[in-house]
Image (cartoon, rainbow over all chains, first blue to last red; front, side):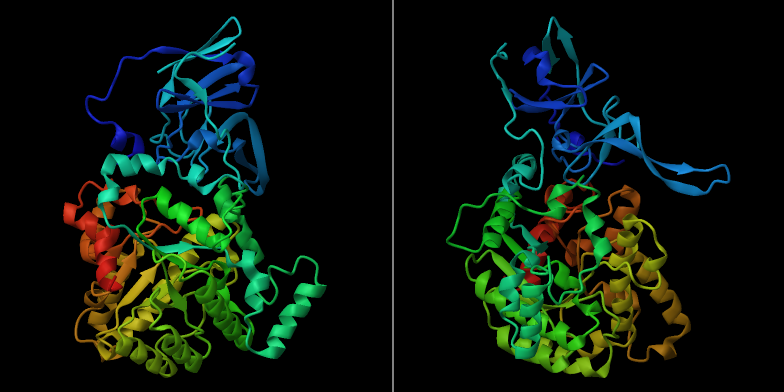
Length: 138
Length: 400
């Protein structure tokens, strides 16, 4: 079994009931942007893609790095021609990633799953938007 | 609309090259609290400062007046050369930061207000404090490629100049900062002079061969160097480095490939020559450390060399036991610790007797650095083994 930082740091009995927190105005999180907040000791990154919000704990599943504070960048794909020859790299704008700035682990923002190994995933939190206000439950 | 109580904007929304080291490494504090790392001796046997940031100062320390003049003229006349003059820094290696995805690899360009010590001392202190490190061995970065310099005289002069600059400007300001000084390996007499000049320095705790070089470490010219290190009781380290220009890596088109191979093959090569030529038999009191190649290569080399040795003992007549036995009598730094298969990792630790031969290293601020919590999270290690790897083995190896 591969130990992830998240598993290492979850002490038995440390779970508490989730509470919905009001974060602030919707315009805090622009399209393809982020807003990082501290909520009672937990740091959470909120992202927006195609108008939809996603929220993850700011802890990489690798070594616990501040994943939400990294570069937001499209997935890189390699193009092949009909003869399977490599003809260059390109960005896939339909799959935006958040990259942990400690070691470069890349996660799809829409799923929180590592781009190269789905066993690595970020801890997600429910996030919603009502009447111009963002709420996160944690 | 104000947020609810208990919700505050995080002060650092995005980490860049200008973010404070303490903010970049803030999450390491979680490991410190969870594992109680403040109660452990943590010795980081491999970290780095960026000597090219201070390059105009360093070239002033060149002792050869002609070489120093060449450097000064390069700095004066060539655009952008002030931080590279005379150096053989390989262009492709600037891909290490994965196109800005790992900013601290490219630069620690944060503000530093302190003026009582060199800027690099402040940066080292910030990293040590953030990762709960008690003693940090600090090395240069591009100087690790000096063994590939096309001009041996310049390579020797640069190493001597860097050593003098480092000992006069970085060491001595904080007793937690140590180093293993690089040997000017192109010139064995200069190696001897370096050992004799610095062996008594309280913060020089060993000497280093930068591994990315094309010389046989078993050649007779080096025996007096190893003998002197054994005599003064100082360990020798081999620090791996990258190259995109050897026969193997020049076929490669991705930095991932180059890094995965070249940081290991240089140490594999030197270790092979070291053992098969019986250097451990000739200098049994010389402590030897293999730095920054991870550890996955160790069981491979143990099996491979043992297999060949048993069939070709006459090729290695100085040996009195299997190559793997010599390997278990040497030391290794942990980073980058390849934790991708826990079963293989456990076998590797067993094969190399890691609880007594492995030493924690961060390699900060490089892109594949390891925090101390990396060691604490390994489930099969004994409590004593964790303490040994994090610091106690280094305490013994370096007489700290």
